[in-house]
Image (cartoon, rainbow, N blue to C red):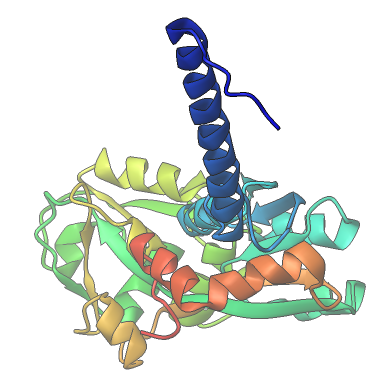
Length: 296
């Protein structure tokens, strides 16, 4: 028979603290396990690895927004976003240095011929805004007038009802998806077939175009609709304002898809990211990045 053991007050206190600490540790382990199961500290998807998205400068904000949202859900995934231009992004995918090419235009026939297994999927829509400096009183331009400005037939704003100010033409570099879309949708042809005015200021990014136009009262340029801010003024084209609503109802003519390009069918981490971009959560990120979601 067990004898009653009388503990000193100090030993009793140590025993109580030990039991309490054991209970606390057990509770903490259980909470940690539960937290992992709920995806709060550990991704339930189990996705891990690195993904490179290379391409359009017009899509840079969209790509970053989607990448940030996806990495927040999948902490073991790292996504690198490179804004080098649509053609460069497609080339990177073709050569295997990127998993996703971000293109602000559809694939060209020669790109499909060169790399037959390229696949493309639209993840958003965009409008190309024709922009001028806010000091310019012009509010509306006809498509034909824009063509004449960009080919050099019209070189002063006074010829269009504006002030006696020489027009500074600003455009994107050859190979830009935005330039190719502008050539097709506004100029009515392929970039290689259009004789753009030789005096045009050529910029290699959306931001550079915006800065050029914002700093020159006589300038005109074009850029992704979502990039236009208070430093620029988007003119109406043929009486139609450059707004998301007019892109969706197809009344604004200068509209294009934002496309993700892969080599072969997307799989693994690449597929998971594209699926996320097309999900309700991904399309919300697209909208917050000022592009036009497909499901709006």
